[in-house]
Amino acid sequence: MPHSNIGCGELVQPSHISPNAPDLESAYRKLRPMLFGALGKLSRQGFSVLPSDGLDVIHDFFVDEWTKVSATYDPSKGKLESYVYAAFVNFARPRLIRSQRLQRSLADPQELSKLA
Image (cartoon, rainbow, N blue to C red):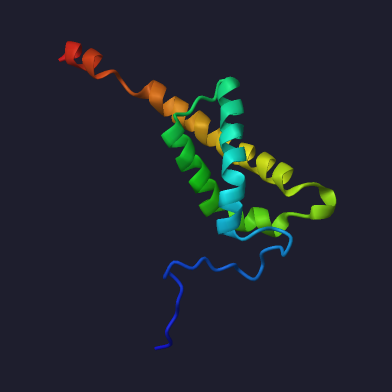
């Protein structure tokens, strides 16, 4: 069986990633502060999120969407940061809405104890 280094701390860049986009690790380090800013703006628009949950949304974005985002990025159409910002907002907003709906649907434990 051939030996592979995948999973040994190295991030592998798939071949269909645009050469104009940074690899996952570089993008995460570079763009994470900007994405926290996007979450702050979404919070001010009513899509509130706790910082720990916000970090989960950022991680999910990179895990679930980075391959597609980096493959479809075209530098002739604008800056990478602008493209990623828009892609992140489109990814995060529905998740935040679902999270808010779930939180509203949960019953307060003290209220439940009154019903018992």
